[in-house]
Amino acid sequence: MISVLLVENHAAVREAFATTLCAQEGINVVATAATVREAVNLAWIHQPDVALVAVQMSNDSGFDLVEQLRTSVPHCRTIILSAVDVPGYMRRAYDQGAWAYLTKDQPFAEIVRAIRKVYAGKHLIDPVVADQVNKSPLTTRETEVLRMVDRMGTTSEIAKEMHLSQGTINNYISSILTKLKVSSRVQALITARNNGWL
Image (cartoon, rainbow, N blue to C red; front, side, top):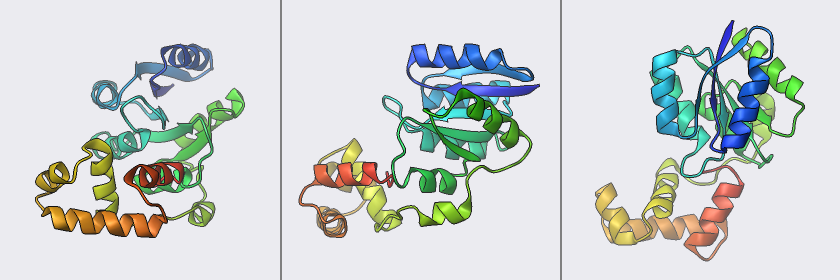
């Protein structure tokens, strides 16, 4: 029996997925979660074989959960489910340690097949294909600063949180805007999200 943790923030979608998955032979949904924190706690308790994780959640990112599960419940293999096929998402899923990347518009039979294959130890993300997806032009530090811009907003708050001067943060932001060829922080966030770099 393959034990599955289902992580999806929309209750109706979560319930429909859980009901349909439980009807499949050899698959048991042991827990469902709506947030990263809830999912990590439930994964620790139930020790699932596979986690089926939505990328887009209200205040969380499925990518963050992939990394957390990889360290806290290392035997659990994660499948990323995305509502849209955004360039860069597959690359990020692969980098974070996901075993498969699927879009929600795929036939349900494909999702079930993916669960069985991942449980059997097969990756469904081709590294060659992943390498062809957009790579971020930003450094790790610049990406970190942009995430802080998303969370905190002001330069002074970011500087305090990162233990850097406001001038250094402004330099990072200037570099980010130049590399992404945009003129504002909002545009930088939109560009980075659309390409799966955040």
